[in-house]
Length: 275
Image 1 (cartoon, rainbow, N blue to C red):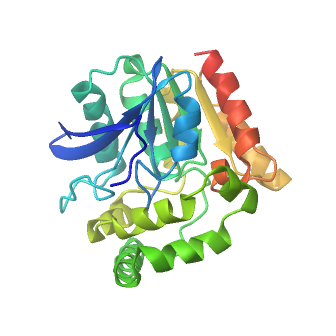
Image 2 (image 1 turned 45 degrees about the vertical axis):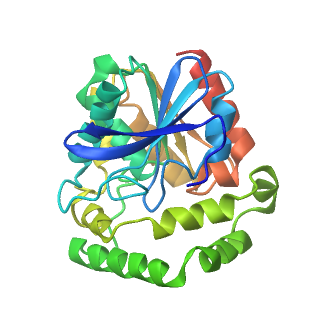
Image 3 (image 1 turned 180 degrees about the vertical axis):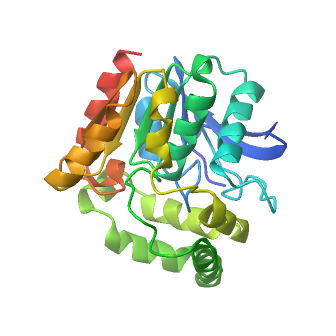
């Protein structure tokens, strides 16, 4: 496992499962929850930039990276309990929680479950927010994920990294050397058990927005760019946040911090200054 010299790593038991975590930097704590098919090491550029003035902890979600992959426990409530258990195990007091996609949904659920334990929540294009009907049934999604994980295992890191290098924005590659390989490593480290997230980890098409009234901590939602109708729908949903705002990052796709890193980071840093 290739880690920068100023990163440390360890394993804690949280919510009954062994989770691998990574820590770097000094200052007010931020905990990063990655997205589906990813791991806690993959967003090194984001983590290193935040670590200039923060202690940043990232972790491998269950079934991902070097964390345990039990056969059960993949609902959004399970993932939120894992995250809160990680805070307990590492004695992290009132961190800002930052999550992308699946991790954004995890952060929303944790912040709604334990609002007094969170100093802020940042949801980066969270899964389960749009309200669009899923194109496949839960069983079909689970089968697709198992096939995808098996394919990646067969192809290996080198082949996947080469493909990733052709797909990532050139300016992002210039600023984040090694990113294609980090993403490839994350893909091959996924356990087939994460198919259960596809089956049961998304209770309905708009469950994250339904959590908004319960999230009392300061909240920033960074969304991919969208057409005017979708923007209005997103902003209307964000009105339910007691203490939050939603920003559509111009030109951003779902991978907000890859497609429009500088613009997204400006919004994030401004939010963090107020926490």
